Length: 234
Image 1 (cartoon, rainbow, N blue to C red):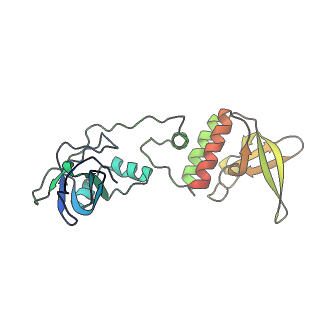
Image 2: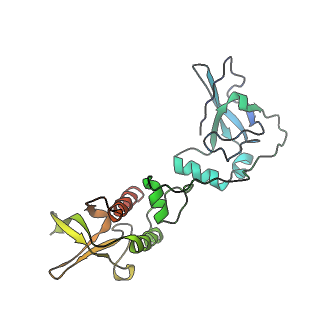
């Protein structure tokens, strides 16, 4: 994780120095996360246009003290929780004195946003904004199935490429009328949730992740969100 602040002059630290974050410093990305007392070894000094940034690898004592929410946020945002980068004015030499590692006193988790696709998936899976999106597995598919069964409004229009024989696929319009219950089909990581079109002429079952929905209704958006998660987190 890296943050940069403006600073002029020569670097105060060098690679290999043991450093510690000064008391009262908070993470610029997560203001509710104090960093005072975090310590480690400088691995890189970055100087650019008057800015000096120290990147340091956190030591074992600091890593053991990290709040679980901090780890979740780093995983969510694709950050390395084992490293930190701060402006040198936020750091001091670690002389070995055992300082208290500050801990958050009030975690402020932003509310889920309906405008954020990741957040809409989190809502379907019963997660918070701080949680990374989980992998597709049986338990998460069951959770998503319960959410869609409760919130989808049937019927809605879609398009599906129906398999014919071993290798041929035929594109067909369809009207999705329901989801198959888990006890009536096999929900797994390969096919996911199964949708169905039931009418007097023909019953067609299909993986919900393989249809293309038409329209801008809430149901179409929920199916699109599910497809996004299913194809990217398997």
